[in-house]
Length: 166
Image 1: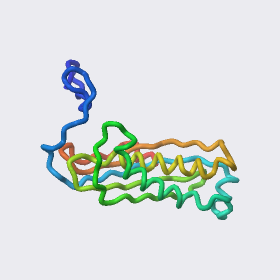
Image 2: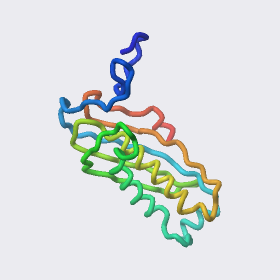
Image 3: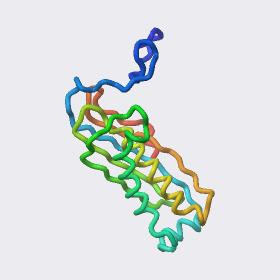
Image 4: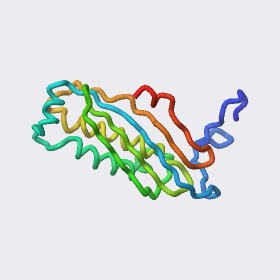
């Protein structure tokens, strides 16, 4: 806690300098996280995706691979994330009425959580859909990326109240 009673940010030392959190004293536990997000698309673009009519191929399958790769490389993208040995990365991309709903589920047996890996997977999958489809329509909107739930570790389970909106 800081002087105002708020939780202390763990990436800062006592003098306020940035640091990578020390985790060697933590116990290995099964840690899992689920993240969600979406990308809104025009009706015409959705129809093209459903029909498999994009020249570059299936954007949803390419995005699934990109999201899996991104989860594995999160420590290279987010400066203070630890490198983790992930045991599972699943991504689902489902066409909805107005776009694509993306969900990732990431797991590891380790000393720190996989929330950032799950969020990174969703983010990169959405960006990949955008990249695959931008020649047809640049009005796509990426949004609503959030941690739905996580389990494991000292802080225990977390369920995001925002997940009831989806």
